[in-house]
Image 1: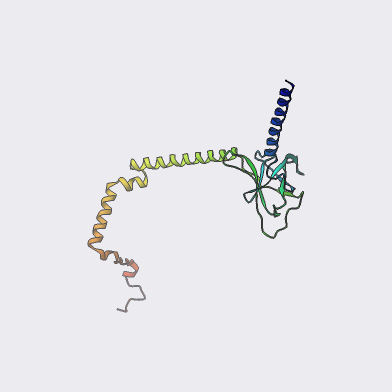
Image 2: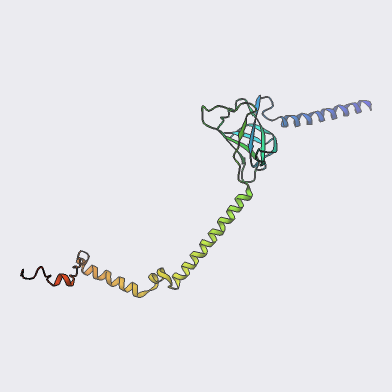
Length: 222
């Protein structure tokens, strides 16, 4: 009986140890055995990024967000400060662009670092960079709604123009449905086909009355 209890305790201990080992293995991540450094990013809108969010350089994961906090700048405006940890082999130029991106439309938020100009000074450990504010989903939805309203107005205007054309109103409607204009145009075309020389004929300039009657200076010269 005692041997059975002892075996059960050993088995339970081994089982719990395996569970803890599995949790620790998956929680360590790929960067546990790598060395790196911290940089800080200040921006006006975090777009929902949280701690442990991935940090990518040129599309490759090189670190993670260690901390996210808010503060007031010298003008009293609320800003966001992110503490990023990146690996030593992630060389980040000082003019690199940093944005908060999304995996898919509603996926995980992460920090995207777009490499800067080659040869520019690199950001040192504990250096500060300034990120670009992302556009929120609400702002995109608002812009899409405004565009939809404008398209609706354009479609309504086109419907009105088409209705005028169908009823023969307006300049375009008259050109399409007025038979007299069509007959006059057809007659003119037939006339030009029969007498193409009219296209080259220039009408004579009408002489004025002063040109028809001799002036006083011309009297007696005939």
